[in-house]
Each structure stands twice: as structure tokens, then as C-alpha cells.
Image (tube, rainbow, N blue to C red; front, top):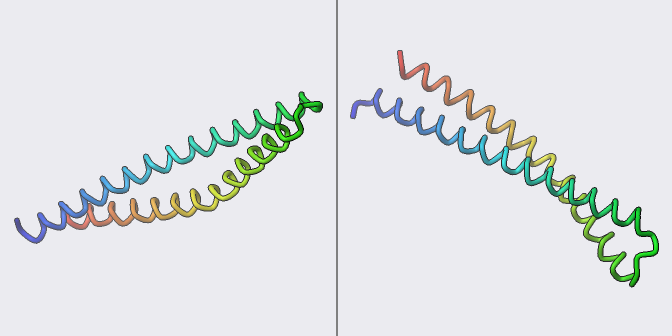
Length: 102
């Protein structure tokens, strides 16, 4: 394998890695959105059942809702940073592909 062929293979591998990262980012976003929907459902239960007994059930639901919302808040910056890194990797991989194909 020549040096140029080796560089082309590395560029192709990088493109494949970027694609995998992008797919995983989308999966994480879907999971995050599902958690937000669950938190909304729990909140709706709490709104429509103000007399929910025993009280420990209500507290447990409130804790679940609050924890789901915390997960949502913590996911947002991570997803943003991962998207930025993915974009940078994609740009680098594209440049490497262009360079090695000349």
C-alpha cells in the first residue's frame, strides 16, 4: 500500500467514524426527547391528580419528574459539544479526502 493509498484509507475511516458519531448523536437526541416527554407525562399526572395518595407516591413522581428534567438539562450542552466535534471531524475528514484524491 502506497503512502497516498494509506492516507486515502485513513480519510475513509475518518468519514466512517464521523458518520457513526452523527448516528449516535441522533440516537442520544431521540433518547433525550423521550425523557422530556416522560417528564411531561409525569408532570401531567401530578397536575391532574392533586389528591394523589399516599403522599409518598406523589413525592416519588415529583422526584422522577425533576430527575428527568435534570437529565434533559445536562444532555443539552453535551449534545451541543458533540455536534460541534462531529462537524469539525467531518470537515477534517473531507479536507483529508480532497487532499489525498489529488
